[in-house]
Amino acid sequence: MTKRITEISDMTSIVNQYLQSGQTIGFVPTMGALHEGHLALIQEAKLNNDLTVVSIFVNPLQFGPGEDYDAYPRDIDKDEVMISQIGVDYLFYPAAVAMYPKQDIKLTVGKLAEVLEGANRPGHFDGVVTVVNKLFNIVKPTRAYFGRKDAQQLAIIEAMVQDFNHDIEIKGIDIVREKDGLAKSSRNVYLTESERLEAVALYNSLLLAKELIDGGEKNTAVIEEEITRFISSYSSGIVEEAAIYRYPELTKVDILKGQCFISLAVKFSKARLIDNMIIGATK
Ligand SMILES: Nc1ncnc2c1ncn2[C@@H]1O[C@H](COP(=O)(O)OP(=O)(O)OP(=O)(O)O)[C@@H](O)[C@H]1O
Ligand SMILES: CC(C)(CO)[C@@H](O)C(=O)[O-]
Ligand code: BAL
Image (cartoon, rainbow, N blue to C red; front, top):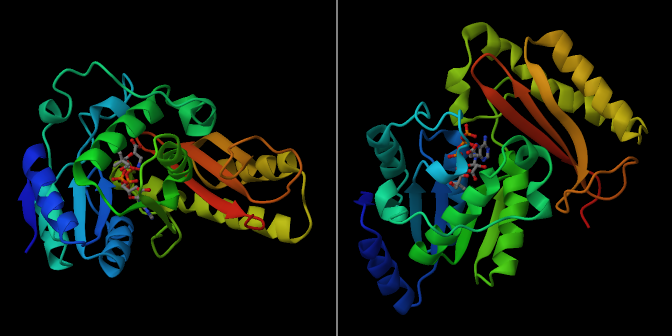
């Protein structure tokens, strides 16, 4: 059965005991409202570590003014049942006042946060790296697991681990999708019934882009235009972002070369969905 830990000092003394006896700790940070996407990360952590810790913390620091911090779906009891069933050892569930008693010091991300989601959500990645740093210091994981759905976040966490000399292996896990291709996300519950059906256009536009690329198209502006046209024709969503960047450097590319990713953000009436596809040779 999963043990729920709310006190930071309790979490740290528990992991210290395991580390002292030479055991490895797999860590999955989340904001809760768990779904199969999260479970894929957790399964991988369980498979490769002696101990698995999942955190659930809706981090106020990464939400901008007017964003959905208050509305963000929360169901801690249901989440706890889900992770108990797959045998997670510890659920770390701290209170915001415990995580941010003073809220005075935070980390700042540079260029990697100036584009894509970072440009759309100023300060978002500063909040993410600040909380992930704190969580890493508390949980002291051997390995930490992040989804490729949030590809920019994953690139930034990898850079943060290097810059701050964390001795932690960062593992990226592939996007888990619904049967029709929509990327699983806690925010999908904001979609209306008709928007839910239309939302498959994001994934289908990525498939279309892949077809164009496989057919020899290298001009990123052409591919971005086709993606935008496709999503706008098949859904009521507003395309806020359909852009191709080098990955994980996150620099803009005009002509496809090396490993890149197509990044999408589409705004429906309440939900803002993101999706992406990594393309090209791995370096
Ligand atoms: N469909 C998915 N496939 C793989 N990983 C995922 C998926 N959805 C979320 N994750 C990963 O789970 C971790 C926790 O994410 P989070 O709790 O924010 O869930 P979410 O569904 O991404 O929520 P949101 O709707 O806020 O984007 C992150 O590393 C995220 O990339
Ligand atoms: C990594 C994370 C748990 C930090 O709050 C969050 O950004 C998320 O769920 O992707
Ligand atoms: N999974 C990303 C967290 C966020 O949107 O705040």
